[in-house]
Image (cartoon, rainbow, N blue to C red; front, side, top):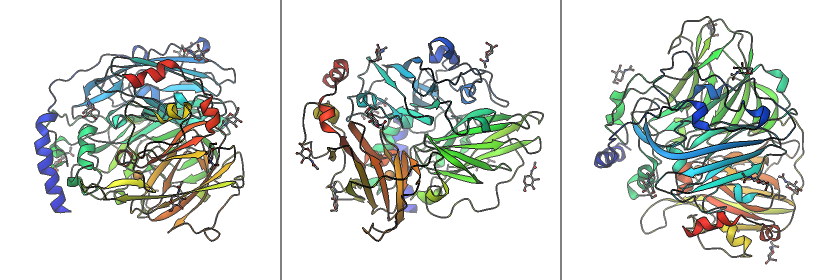
Length: 593
Ligand SMILES: *[C@@H]1O[C@H](CO)[C@@H](O)[C@H](O)[C@H]1NC(C)=O
Ligand SMILES: *[C@@H]1O[C@H](CO)[C@@H](O)[C@H](O)[C@H]1NC(C)=O
Ligand SMILES: *[C@@H]1O[C@H](CO)[C@@H](O)[C@H](O)[C@H]1NC(C)=O
Ligand SMILES: *[C@@H]1O[C@H](CO)[C@@H](O)[C@H](O)[C@H]1NC(C)=O
Ligand SMILES: *[C@@H]1O[C@H](CO)[C@@H](O)[C@H](O)[C@H]1NC(C)=O
Ligand SMILES: *[C@@H]1O[C@H](CO)[C@@H](O)[C@H](O)[C@H]1NC(C)=O
Ligand SMILES: *[C@@H]1O[C@H](CO)[C@@H](O)[C@H](O)[C@H]1NC(C)=O
Ligand SMILES: *[C@@H]1O[C@H](CO)[C@@H](O)[C@H](O)[C@H]1NC(C)=O
Ligand SMILES: [Cu+2]
């Protein structure tokens, strides 16, 4: 391992010249200008929450808009559908979320990007203008896109990337779902470089609507000082020996402290200008109120354990599905997943640490620059403003050792549904193998390691009636509206948060080793439903979903390097309906660019 680290140092040093930051641009946008959220009628509140930075924040971080993470009371939760318009421009900017300057890819100059806030049934219209040098596509993580599969934003699957200099308008509705979601680039590894934001859907039917007074978003992410194309090419080279790049830091709502003296010992030193006084995020609590905390892991590799000193977390939602409340001290949350928890501001007026502890057991490598305990603060009104707290972590051990989800049997959906009986079973074997000439470890589902198509999208091919796809595309065709049982055997030592686009799946079974039909126990009685499920190391997972949403749906590991290494399959659901899709011509035209 030490040898490997030395190799990395050398490699990092060579790269440094190419990564030197030349200028720093501080976009001077306020949130309203930035988001240009032209919202119809009563919904003009979408971006209206206070623009004042929280206690302790430095106003210099003009790209960061803490106000949008505290949802405004002015937002009207209603069942009357509305159209919400957003106008986004994606461009490269040099900013310093944790004090170290680096080029990032940002929407409207914001990091994290603009909040989308809507009600169930609303229409969302987002005009995306691409001012990058590469094509891009935006995916709306967890949206069903029922009847609008081509708005899913998956590069090479449901669309060709939006070419540089061009615009595309995403336009879809969000019926029959609510809760906490997010959006992110789904082209190359771009979201790792900043193209991410929260997406919240309200509904008067939400189970726990009356159980909280305030509504707050906590976006967690791991964070690299080096742009992702460099990380990915290293990862997909023999030099990495299959080890994922380990983050330099982590962020909470786009902020954290970084000790600049540690940059030289990073796996990828940058030598970029760095300011050791970047502020952490601060969440203001009013004593006596109840807060809904929406935790989103918008990172690319690390599994976090989320906790708040002296405050228990009552989990009420997982990936947009309301849960019967369950009280915990810590929530493990893997990439792509979301949880809501209710927290009572019932402790002594003081400052408390919020902790997002990266699970180092999931990493093969060490990064000496990384402080794996990512922090933010709760500040009770009346306590002194501070960037620090004297509170201590819960006494119980943060990590059981391996990288696992909150146990499925702890999470019981509030609206109980038994898993329907399976009509058809699909078995997938997931592994990493070094079988290429280049001695690079690639991700395989059965015999296929996914490589995105160039100037083509599998959806458009299916729309033309194609049923056989390129060898790099593992497309599983599901002809009928029926219940699919998806068994995934993980033959890898790592755990993998798999996300199925367009669906919520029933998690009916999990265990060690290979799935053995008839022997591995299943629970079909109101099992957990969600859209991103962690496959445990050397274990099996059994999922079920109803194949009633026509389209080409990726099922992939959300760990970004693993997706780049090919860990993806696609379900072609209801091909005859897909053939009948009237896909906008402008979308298909982007393949010619
Ligand atoms: C909410 O609406 C009221 C009345 O229109 C307005 O005075 C207030 O500034 C708004 N609050 C926010 C956070 O936008
Ligand atoms: C554009 O894409 C190429 C190929 O993936 C990559 O090498 C390059 O770094 C990207 N440029 C930016 C600014 O992200
Ligand atoms: C969005 O789609 C709806 C339904 O197809 C259509 O009526 C509307 O004009 C579209 N809006 C935009 C801005 O493209
Ligand atoms: C930063 O790291 C250096 C070297 O490990 C250490 O001496 C210093 O105390 C650290 N500074 C802060 C503010 O943590
Ligand atoms: C937080 O909890 C710890 C352990 O129970 C306790 O010792 C401490 O006094 C609490 N802190 C405050 C500010 O209430
Ligand atoms: C994947 O491979 C396994 C093991 O060979 C096989 O049982 C399964 O049917 C394959 N899955 C598909 C969708 O082809
Ligand atoms: C699905 O339909 C296609 C075209 O009709 C057919 O070739 C294929 O065998 C069918 N697949 C299954 C699993 O029935
Ligand atoms: C999708 O729409 C079809 C037809 O309206 C409906 O039968 C099905 O239940 C919907 N599925 C989802 C996941 O919304
Ligand atoms: Cu993975």
